[in-house]
Amino acid sequence: MLAGILLGPQRVEIRETEAPRPSRGEVLVKIGAALTCGTDLKAYLRGHPMIPVPGVFGHEFSGVIAEAGKGVRGFKEGDSVMSVHSAPCLKCRYCRKRLFNLCENIMNSKVLGAFAEYILLPEHIVKQNLFHKPDGLPYEEAAFLEPLSCVVHSMAALAIRKGERVLIIGAGPIGLLHLLLAKLKGAEVIITGLEQERLALAESLGADRAVAPGELIDALREFTGGMGVDFVFECAGQVSVWEDSVSYVRRGGAVILFGGCKSGTTVTYDTYRLHYDEITLKGVFHFTPPDVKKAYALLKGTLDVSPLISGRYRLSELEIPLEKLSKGKGIKYAIIP
Image (cartoon, rainbow, N blue to C red):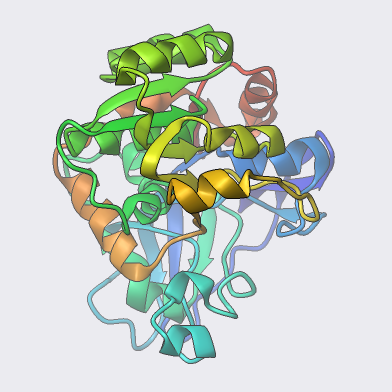
């Protein structure tokens, strides 16, 4: 089979490799579509601690079962499926506390290699996070299951009600997925980002306001009457933005820190503001099997993610969309082997 091998910064090679065979409980999926994401882009540009080099990469995908190992129940060869690339072990200390996204083994047992013709899914993923793809859902939209699960988890602990005001910082794919879910909940949303094309897309997706960072303070004052928003979702992953986020939320509001900053960096907050205004700061990471099920239901239902697909490329053209994303062009690209 053909597979995209990340050799180092901005070095990708399409190689012929041996297709894996499924063992007991495993399934081999022929990729129908894989999506680019921010993690892939970081790995391509400068490396990523969770993506070994040299090695296969890509982790957002859907496809068709090419072969099912012995003992697999509910799935068979020829089934169209959608999946995420990880699942909890269900045995560690955190799993026993039902903190499945913080499973001690989840990152060590994740699957990479969606930028290829085939990907092998181990038994723990098959049992927990593999789903039948609805006939009417295109493969490239079904591949949104993984990033949408992360965004579902981001909002899972919040009771966002109709008419509440939400600020989303960052108009990339994750910020735009937050926008889509917040609008489904009936929120009024203001989003900020650097690229005008992405802000225009955000407006077409229902954002009530879409502004550049330099316009944000005045826009928020008008948007909230000077009170501040009920919820802030930080989707940029920058230390300075993490620190600024608490300035935008009302008393008693919550700031959700989705964007990951570099390991070892620190932030500073005004303790008076956090304490006396009772601000909630919440980090979010990954997803749980219930989050994946909710994301699956959303994709099966009325959530339209198709506007977030900026183009389609063959596997042999993998570097083209990665280079485009490095220049801020596009949201997500579908790789069709």
